[in-house]
Structure formats: structure tokens, C-alpha cells
Length: 148
Figure: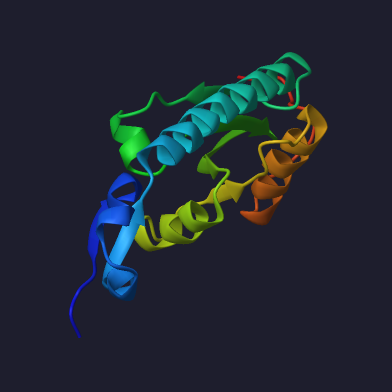
């Protein structure tokens, strides 16, 4: 079977209709919009994690910048907890795209990712982060002070 070629949606009219099945069409404007929407959502998740830190639900978090080693390894955020004087950390990716969510696990086996809708409110984002931590078996609750 012959491999389909990718071409821009703007060139779709130049291809005869009976040959459309031979091509994948890429809309770069749509891809740019979705990418921008995803970055804005990561900023919202970062804000929610900061509130969780201020409220004592997590010890601290780190947001990994786009293009960093951690980001290319599938980790958008690392969250740290302390329970029974033992530090725990969880690293995970976030996405708003179902296709990206499915591809994440192929590209980063054994890693964790949260698929959220871009219209989630802050409470839903917090609940999704806490459920991820519970899913991977880390304790959830108020942090306890570190004792020597």
C-alpha cells in the first residue's frame, strides 16, 4: 500500500477530488491555534498548582518549560508531596487533545498524562491532578511538616 503524503489544506483545491484519498491535509492555522490553546491551558494548570501549594495540598511543583529536557521526556509538571516525613514526587504531562493523549503513551511508555478539556474550571483541574496522584499510589492530603 502506498503511503499518503501530507499537504497543506490551502493546496487541497489543486488536487482532484478522486485523489483526495491519497493525501493527508494539514491545516497549520488550526494547529497553531490548538498549540497556543494548549500552552495557555498549561499556564492555567500552573496557576492551580500554585494555589494548591499555597493551600498546603502539595509541598511544591515545577513547571517544565517547552522544549526542556523534561518536557521532551513527557513531563510538563513535577509535583512534590510530603507524607509521614517521606518526600514523594509525581511527574506528568497534560493535554487537551484526545489524539495527543493517545500518542503520549506510545511516545512515553510508563509515564503519566492527564487529558483535560480547555473549559475545565480550577476545581476540576485540581481534582484531575489529585486523582492522578491517587492513581499512581501516592498519598494525598495535607502536607505534614518535615521533622529531623
